Length: 278
Image (tube, rainbow, N blue to C red; front, side):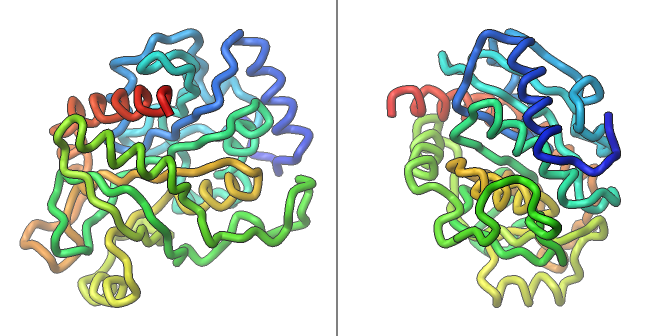
């Protein structure tokens, strides 16, 4: 693990190291957040590497996030999976949080699925639903593209279509295929780690948000800067503050994720099968 400032050289170096560990060259990658790591129950593993052995990767410090990179086949599709992520609220710089995305781009990934656990704001949503991201609102107070611009990619990135229409369609098809309630909506990202107040939830709803969480947006922005096609998927693990009588806790998030893990694994497998045919 390195806590030093990451550079373009480091991301290419890490990608080169990774290429030496596997002969597979997937074009699809996934970042599995809270609740989604059960998807690995269906994977044929070629190689699994702890983040601590990958130059430039940060260790993971949140319950529910493992911190391993896996390359293998899922639903017959070569895929690279990041089991867990680091978060802005852990005190890291945005550049460090999004370093793995730059490694994926240098490795040859072209399509990226970002997953997360989120609180529902839309009153039609209920815990256990999945939500395909159509757009996002960044209220994290920072942007991963700030800084000296070392990476030789566009400085000013168009975010009109962050979340790819074709990939969104495949996610919705996967939900229908396995009969799992799958919604579409706007994800609002905050810095955390405190949960939102009821007043904030009401305000976010008025801004057009359907769900709220503490990740995904920095990775999506950097992925688009690197030219990757992006899809986002939230597991609605709880209702936002003030929308139910249940106090908010990380344990509640993990419990709902555990309850849904078999369905989520089935969903991700179905998505990969549809992706292979598209």
